[in-house]
Length: 93
Image (cartoon, rainbow, N blue to C red; front, top):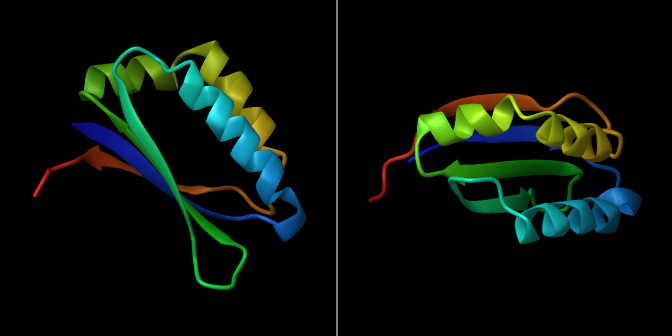
Protein backbone atom coordinates (compact mmCIF):
# COMPACT_ATOMS: atom_id res chain seq x y z
CA UNK A 1 0.00 0.00 0.00
CA UNK A 2 1.01 3.62 -0.46
CA UNK A 3 -0.36 6.89 0.83
CA UNK A 4 0.08 10.20 2.48
CA UNK A 5 -0.39 11.86 5.81
CA UNK A 6 -0.63 15.58 6.37
CA UNK A 7 -0.69 17.90 9.33
CA UNK A 8 -2.54 21.22 9.27
CA UNK A 9 -4.66 23.48 11.44
CA UNK A 10 -8.42 23.94 11.16
CA UNK A 11 -10.51 26.51 13.00
CA UNK A 12 -13.21 24.81 15.11
CA UNK A 13 -15.98 26.49 13.11
CA UNK A 14 -14.69 24.83 9.91
CA UNK A 15 -14.56 21.23 11.16
CA UNK A 16 -18.10 20.32 10.07
CA UNK A 17 -17.60 21.74 6.57
CA UNK A 18 -14.31 19.88 6.26
CA UNK A 19 -15.97 16.64 7.34
CA UNK A 20 -18.66 17.13 4.68
CA UNK A 21 -16.04 17.52 1.95
CA UNK A 22 -14.12 14.44 3.08
CA UNK A 23 -17.32 12.37 3.37
CA UNK A 24 -18.43 13.33 -0.12
CA UNK A 25 -14.99 12.53 -1.51
CA UNK A 26 -15.00 9.10 0.16
CA UNK A 27 -18.42 8.29 -1.29
CA UNK A 28 -16.99 8.66 -4.82
CA UNK A 29 -13.51 7.15 -4.41
CA UNK A 30 -10.68 7.39 -6.90
CA UNK A 31 -9.49 4.13 -8.48
CA UNK A 32 -7.14 2.37 -6.07
CA UNK A 33 -8.32 4.34 -3.05
CA UNK A 34 -8.53 2.18 0.10
CA UNK A 35 -9.38 4.39 3.07
CA UNK A 36 -8.97 7.83 4.61
CA UNK A 37 -8.80 8.92 8.22
CA UNK A 38 -8.69 12.22 10.06
CA UNK A 39 -7.39 12.76 13.56
CA UNK A 40 -7.83 15.93 15.57
CA UNK A 41 -5.16 16.33 18.23
CA UNK A 42 -6.52 16.58 21.76
CA UNK A 43 -8.33 19.88 22.32
CA UNK A 44 -6.50 21.69 19.55
CA UNK A 45 -6.98 22.97 16.01
CA UNK A 46 -4.41 20.48 14.63
CA UNK A 47 -5.68 17.89 12.15
CA UNK A 48 -3.81 14.90 10.76
CA UNK A 49 -5.16 13.51 7.49
CA UNK A 50 -4.34 10.04 6.17
CA UNK A 51 -5.13 8.67 2.70
CA UNK A 52 -4.36 5.06 1.78
CA UNK A 53 -4.13 3.67 -1.77
CA UNK A 54 -3.53 0.18 -3.12
CA UNK A 55 -0.17 1.21 -4.58
CA UNK A 56 1.97 4.16 -5.57
CA UNK A 57 0.66 4.18 -9.14
CA UNK A 58 -2.93 4.63 -7.89
CA UNK A 59 -1.78 7.36 -5.53
CA UNK A 60 0.16 9.19 -8.27
CA UNK A 61 -2.78 8.99 -10.70
CA UNK A 62 -5.04 10.51 -8.06
CA UNK A 63 -2.50 13.21 -7.17
CA UNK A 64 -2.29 14.21 -10.86
CA UNK A 65 -6.07 14.22 -11.40
CA UNK A 66 -7.58 17.72 -11.86
CA UNK A 67 -10.67 16.50 -9.94
CA UNK A 68 -8.45 15.86 -6.91
CA UNK A 69 -6.92 19.32 -7.22
CA UNK A 70 -10.42 20.81 -7.22
CA UNK A 71 -11.24 18.88 -4.04
CA UNK A 72 -7.98 20.01 -2.48
CA UNK A 73 -8.70 23.70 -3.11
CA UNK A 74 -12.11 23.28 -1.44
CA UNK A 75 -10.73 21.81 1.78
CA UNK A 76 -7.56 23.90 1.78
CA UNK A 77 -9.76 27.02 1.97
CA UNK A 78 -11.00 25.77 5.37
CA UNK A 79 -7.50 25.37 6.82
CA UNK A 80 -5.50 27.98 8.67
CA UNK A 81 -2.23 27.06 6.98
CA UNK A 82 -0.76 24.91 4.23
CA UNK A 83 -0.72 21.20 5.13
CA UNK A 84 2.64 19.54 5.72
CA UNK A 85 2.57 16.41 3.53
CA UNK A 86 4.44 13.13 3.95
CA UNK A 87 4.06 10.44 1.27
CA UNK A 88 5.32 6.88 1.46
CA UNK A 89 4.86 3.15 1.56
CA UNK A 90 2.41 1.84 4.16
CA UNK A 91 3.21 -1.44 5.87
CA UNK A 92 0.50 -3.36 7.71
CA UNK A 93 1.50 -4.79 11.07
